[in-house]
Length: 126
Image (cartoon, rainbow, N blue to C red; front, top):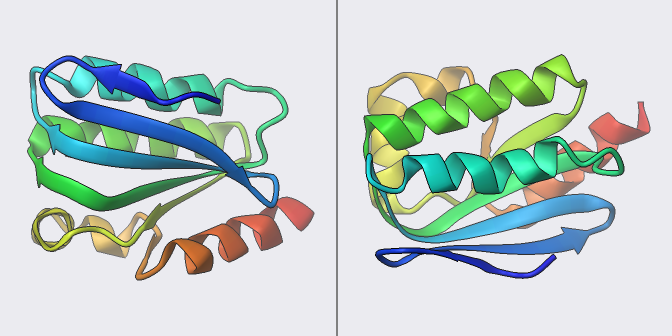
């Protein structure tokens, strides 16, 4: 898959890692970019050959409640289609928002991309 640049500086870079799609998000995720962010992640969840999705948030400089809402919605879609979704390496700002909203207790968040990919690979094997 090729990178997708969303207007105003948000970038989604797609790659496969051991059968798991990794989307590296770069930039700010706010209300003006949330629809494009959602569409970019949905294209992975609706892909029939996809076995799991890791969203790498290490280069996210800002995320607001609409961006968090997108992640929750994608998590629900992934669960409904019995796919793994994991968040990887959130930046300090992203982790702070995820913790403040209590989502770290619900969404699987890993310190490294490798950990998140491994968990999704194991889930896909079962």
